[in-house]
Image (cartoon, rainbow, N blue to C red):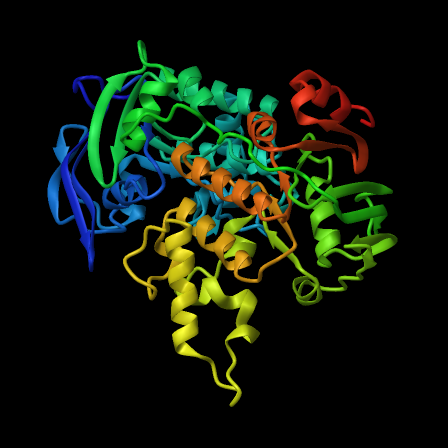
Length: 502
């Protein structure tokens, strides 16, 4: 059990952090009690990640005070923070996939018997933790055989193994099904019952109200308020986050679908299991949603259309003309663009700057007659991405990996808009993005539709599909279960179709 003699397990007071050209944190506070789940919310770029990096010693704060278990601390590394009882479960999982589950938990601190690793003790200790947390995973299997949700549970078990007093969870449900989310919530509540303080970061309001006790809100690097969740509603939280009333979660629909721009006929991917016999039409000016349960192969559709997944059968017709799209380069030249789901692994070049990440899909457009690149045009287009997408960045030269997730996503979307596609395909475009940034992206998508672009959106968020699309293609186990008009459908109808071929 956690020592209860202090009112707060963790007190971060007046924390400030400056980078060249930007003040990321300006006297921010965060106080976490034992036996509590504390929501940390704010728009992308509000300073949440920077604040936690100051706690973990990844960044050195410029001013402020951190008290942990009654002691003034200044961790010099995340290793020191972990060993002291502060742990973090990241949204982007970083695990050694070729090693076993128990190796990942005890990496760097193996139990030993003489000069050798005590595998029996490591197995027993892992099993004991799994039993306490009700996790059903074989400690001896390799991590690369686990599902995303099991990897998430493994990270929590690792935090538990350090006897953590503070556990920080960054968007822990972003890749989980509803059943898996419920299991995760059960484990989080067990941590709370043990006396831990859980800092819960999420943009999903429903989760915040379901599980959290208190909330701290940041905006533009400043502390706005800390309050009990009881008595607050969604609108008041959004207003504090964005600094204004957000009366709508979705823009007013003002696009008008016109003639068919894309026809997909009998599309089947080569390597099964994958999509089979998928047919649909997309009109110019239309926003077509793709719904389905986890494993329904929604992503396989856009990957096959884009040429990164090989097809064995079917036709793709753009403006009545058949296109082959054998690879991504050919797809781009044919007028297609794809914003991928996994932003960090397949979307950005994390160590490279905003300019490179904005222009990489359109490099041929910047060549002069002499074969050199036009710096003037490159600079102009990079600025267009920053301005049109409202990207918060100190400069063009800033590494994209240092931006918040929402700002990274804006750069990626801007990158593809520079290619002037006829068909823009977006796979989970607002995953891990706050409500204010979501609204901006929805507005942008709507404006593109009004310019007669064809838009395909894959989303796991039902309100998003119902709020932004014109029609919804429902997938079930690699097959098309039906296409519904958004204005006439219900969530129940979509879920029934999604279960048709299970």
